[in-house]
Image (cartoon, rainbow, N blue to C red; front, side, top):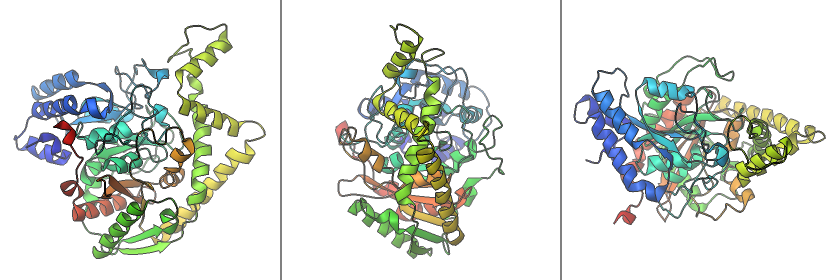
Length: 487
């Protein structure tokens, strides 16, 4: 038995039945990192020795908790006390966080074992993990392809079985799109369901932490742990605590699924379209009511998203000035020169591009024309979704218009890279929950993702719809990354 093949709920069962020990599990994952990391390049910081030490310690004492000794990987924009939190940027190359994010406190309370910090696009800006200052993460299904982004390290680490599950963050699709590219499950929860305290901000009104897992059951379990109100985050919602695993009923009879036709138009790859059409057939066979309808927001969402996201990024990244912490230029003439050099040397090209765009749309004379207009369109997008959810329980779309593309093929064409977010950004604009699950592969054995969108705080509906589909098609049993390169 390969321990790293098991889901977290299977690991729990084996721990309970004393078929495995915490050290067995941790060792298996540390060995897997030793074997795969040189190819996949998913980690910025590995904590292998610390993990083995912690496993030994946890075994030597009686510890309560459902997830004691379960390993996890953390995206490198989530603060971890005493461990580097770099956001994959030169700006924070040596920044060691003095405190834990709320989600990390919750994981520590469960006595999970942190295997390391995972690579990402710098400050979460990008869709391929090629904009990391440290390394380019590769897709475990084909090492010449990107893993998606910005949570590419998290998705690649789960897909290559270097961690059983991971935390990512999603601003415009950054959990769902890499999950689609890497054939894993990625959940972007409702805005406000999970505390953002300790998440290094990119765009505060859009960012949300969420789980990347091997299957839907694990996703529901990790959501149980990290969801909940936090008074330290003013955007945190005080909603009742739920057990999301209870929603997984493996039954969608009578579920009303809306399919917005605008998401299946121009630019969607034929094999992606075909795979989604097959998924729709599966839902019909399972007893769901599926209907096509018009959600006329897709063409506005991308422009709205990039105006709001860049404006908020420009504001949030103003704190990195070479004075208090972060990268500081070695040579400078005066204070202004120190600011300029520290920022121009510390930030990469994509981050600079978005700061400049954001500063422009917030500047005097352009604020009303761009930023104010984008906020008005945001309200229209929310209203359109509200209308749709009066009729449907769940909306079904592709996660990405294509499968994973070749490394280097879009990194010099930002516009083309931005278009890859067309299916995911509207969910963040409206603050809704969305999940990506694998629904098939193309002829080159690259995974295709399906996105299910729910109304606010209706995670149970999308989790059950995803779970029921997953049980039917058994993607993980039938498809897996090609490991020929291991000889």
